[in-house]
Each structure stands twice: as C-alpha cells, then as structure tokens.
Image (cartoon, rainbow, N blue to C red):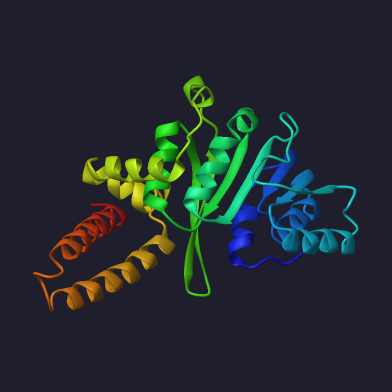
Length: 257
C-alpha cells in the first residue's frame, strides 16, 4: 500500500504494537499499510461516518486483511474496548475534536504505549492543553503535501492520575475558549513553543523553517492591508503584530540564537 506524504508520516511515526486503533480511519489505508509492513499485528479501524467506513471495509477485503483489521463504526474511541489496544492513531481532524477524543477516551488510553496525533487546526491551544493534561510529546515531525504543512506528534499518556479522574467537560467549546485566554497570558517563550511545537523547535525542523517563512509573508500581507485603515483595524492589527512577534521568536530559536 503506497501512502501519500501526510499518511506516510503518520504511519512512519508508529512503533511496533500488538493492536492499534485507527480513529477516523477514512479509507483504511494506514491500517492496511501497518499490517503489511508488520508494524502492527492487528488493527481496529474506526470511523463515525458510514461512507468512508464502507470504503475502508472494501479496501481491507481487497487486500485480504479482514482477519487482521476489524472495521467498527462509532465516535472516537467508543468502539474500542478497554485493554484491547496498546496504541492509537488520531489523525486528519481538527484540534478540538482530537482533544475531545483523548479526553472522552481517557480510561482506555491510560495503558497505551503510543498515540499518534495529527491534527490540522487550533495547534497552539491544542499543544497547551495536551501539556496541561500531562501528555508527553515523545516526538514530532512536520511534512508538506500539496502546499499544506502537517505536524505529526507521538504522544505518551499522562502519568498523573488527576487526568483520568477529571470530571467530564460539559461545554467543550467554553473549555477551549478559556484555555485560549489562559495561553495568551503565558510567557512569550511558552506561547512560541505551543504555537510551533516544542520538539520541532528543538530539532530545528527544516519543514518548520519553510513554514515560518510562508507564515511571515502571509502575516505581513495582512498587516499591509490593515494599516490602510489603522484606527478601524486597531484591535486586529495588534493581534497580528503579536503573532508576528511569536513567529520571529520561533525563527530566532531555529537559528540557534
């Protein structure tokens, strides 16, 4: 099974495991690849949407792997039994949804040896919440495909029992909004790490360097437009200038200053 750049990065981050849950499996390609390469002995491919799940089931049957890959409908980790897996892949979704899957499935991930986490929005607050919950980022890489950049993290579950004993979050949107407010009050160095990735900055990722260059160009373009009506756009202009300050700090870190 040949995978694209993003999915190859996701699959390549997985360490050998007995059973791995592929949450939001889409067409099942990552599950198939991990069985074919011997990285996983067994996969559980889950998706909340019936269309992709039917495609996954068909693809798995075409490769003759239906005895190694279970296809299960359901939301997040709901279809997976506690103690059934030793790892999970949560990829191709927004940060808030990825966080909610982790939180709602916290009793199931407690003993996991790895969680491959590839999300595509709200990265700063996502990293902030992961850190606050006690997740360890064992590794992170960034890849580019079709002009878009994708960070891929390998997480280790929190060791502190407080996370697993946390009360349910009734309003996840309100929880995220509060976390974003709290992040804005943190020191700029920490905001920078949450925004662009602790490991990516530490490793001086070449892909991140390219991404920062494009982001700088994009943000400066926004500033140029906003400065045509500075009084009317005062608040937004201030926000963008703060983003540029964080970006420049990231570039400084990458350069080893």
